[in-house]
Image (cartoon, rainbow, N blue to C red; front, side, top):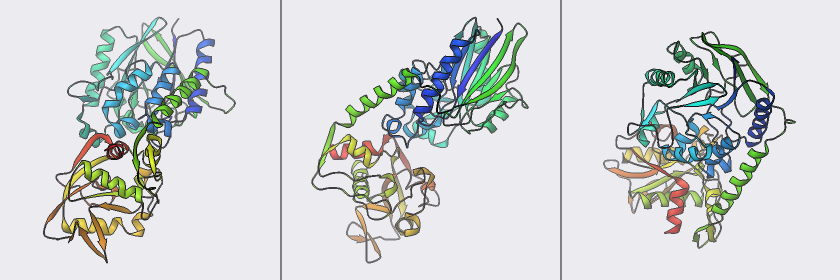
Length: 443
């Protein structure tokens, strides 16, 4: 027997129903064919706009991948950017094997729970799978160090061959352009790149570069299938195609059971009380919002400065009066933003507040908030009176500096309030905004 088949999907972004259908189809294929089959996930099962994903920091999705029988999955940016490398160990527990990433290190090794590569047994074949992911400057905040991708992948490929791998696959969350560039350097080392991140639909694969590249779009709309021929002369790609997911496809009961279990576990956690409020805390998407002011107060309370600031876009609901459960709190904000502190001049502070409280800024939609507006900038320890900005009881002095506490959005360029990031900017990872607000309410 020389045939080996790889099934793959990527960038599901919290589409659990599609995952259940793809998983059922993968099981059906495995049961019908006579050759070995392995199943690969190309990263970003997490999705910040899906409650079950956001409130579990992406762990729920990895539990579902484990239920689907995924043989190997690469670390995407969906969880790593939002929550940092500490979540990877929980992802590994959910998947039942280490998530793969060879081009990011933490203290000289893969993040705890991750591996650079692994060998999957598939019938008579030993399939080496290497993980690589797109690198973001923000990863440095978590202590992650980028490794040279070409060198890292080639080194893993050599190691896998020494350990007896018959086939070596790069499972990449680097995007199609990155994969095309990388492929020329991997000839003779890697047999195939299974890609993700850029959401490209490669129905017949991309066979015009150094080694073959496949990718199956996004959102669970397609199941990728790759047939390989493996013999003493090497590995040959003989067929690349997609099956387009249809609503009538049956759903995998194991995945549906995992969804239900995750929802039950989450419900217990959400129903726990975390604090109380004397009065109802209101919410408004773009203008004055009491919940945003409360969040600004929580930020400056835990990271003291002259003032706190936060845009309303971080908040999606208010809080009830009386007992507040974790469900109430995470409905109010599930933002994965982190606290940030920096020193700015009086002139810069005045400009930030003027822009942040303008109608134009408040209604401007932001990719950061999945198309919702930034909302107005809210302050704690400062206010605008009759057009004049006061910090404490004194008008802002353009000749002095102020210590500002906000989130990474308000004090970074992508929040559009500063033209360049302050030289002493510190982003306090990995604690995220709902955790900051929970600590404040509990205290």
